[in-house]
Image 1 (tube, rainbow, N blue to C red):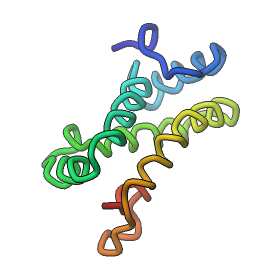
Image 2: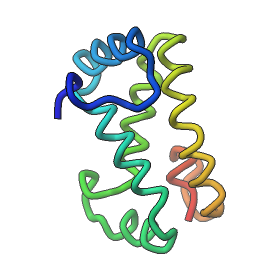
Image 3: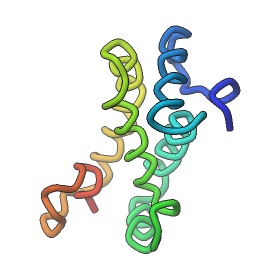
Image 4: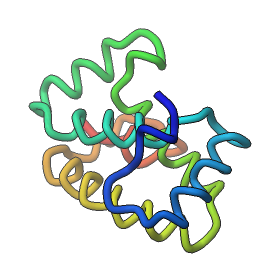
Length: 118
């Protein structure tokens, strides 16, 4: 998947250009669109399935939470305008995930917030 054919819905053209530059430097072409689509799919599956997939993945490439990790890497690397635009698309998915999961007090506190939920 390349950034020319895969985009995050709702992002303005100027932001897509910044996103493509960010992917070339910090990720790989199409990484953000793929991660966005994967995170969207992950947060809408049954919570029990999401938890089973995350715990039983055995490798990062099969972990549905890896999609959110990639999105976070992009959010950190982007400039303020592009970060706000991408975050506006990611936040509703995060909110949905939060509503469907609970904090797991047994997880390490240094993990990302989405990895501390069950």
